[in-house]
Amino acid sequence: MHSRSWNRCLAQDSVTGTWCHRRPSDGVFCPPHASEFRFDEAAKAATRLAHARLVVWDPSSTPFQRWWASLQVRRARSLRRSILAKVAESEGHTSDIASLSEGLVPPEDINTWS
Image (cartoon, rainbow, N blue to C red):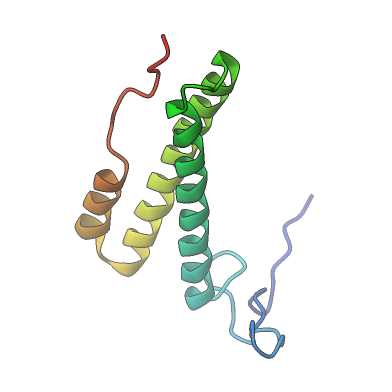
């Protein structure tokens, strides 16, 4: 199967609804929309991480719910780190954001029920 090349960015303006007419340089998005997409995905991962941590810490959660939430915590933490590293790399702030991402998600043992 061949890959398709796009001649314009695949993002739409949220106000007017028109397509962006810039050429894609970062996958299917132009640089501003690619950065916006990464920040949005990092925020979604942080939200999933927070929700999963609440389930892990909730004493009324069943062992299965805690196990599933701990899995989600690990996945969200990993995704958030990789997205923030990519954002830092694309903006040239490798040390600043990379160290910030480590501070946002402290490495702690989330398997507290065992």
